[in-house]
Length: 142
Image (tube, rainbow, N blue to C red; front, side):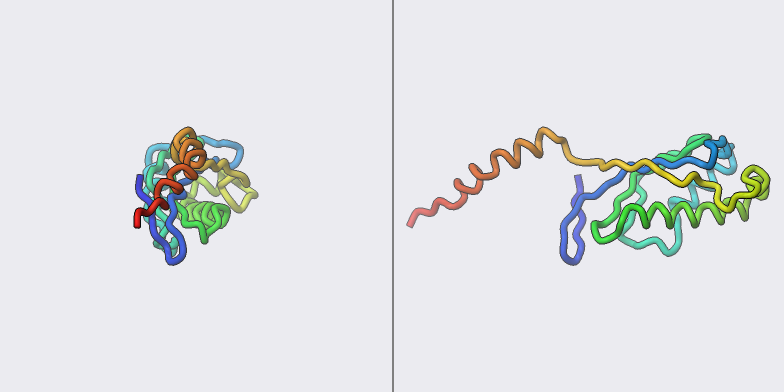
């Protein structure tokens, strides 16, 4: 477990993000999948504090675990990644123009996001017993 440090916050904000191509088409054949993997792992102009920790490209969807600092919205990061990858994929693989004929993007509109957090039981126990820990720390012998 690694916390990161920003100018005004210490955070551990990891997100599991999943998104699909339009119509859930199985476009990620061997070469396309490898190129998509490379694109997402090495995106230019992505905030340097954003880190793609894990990535899995399936034939009809993408799973990603990503660290996003609290000052940046998840929606803006996902939109940026989808926009950049769509244009690069369509440029590199012309067959995608035919697969998604009449549509600008290759991605479906939505996505799924969930947080990757600490153990819930540990957090509840920590919050519940925080007062006891604090009161023990305040006892001073003079």
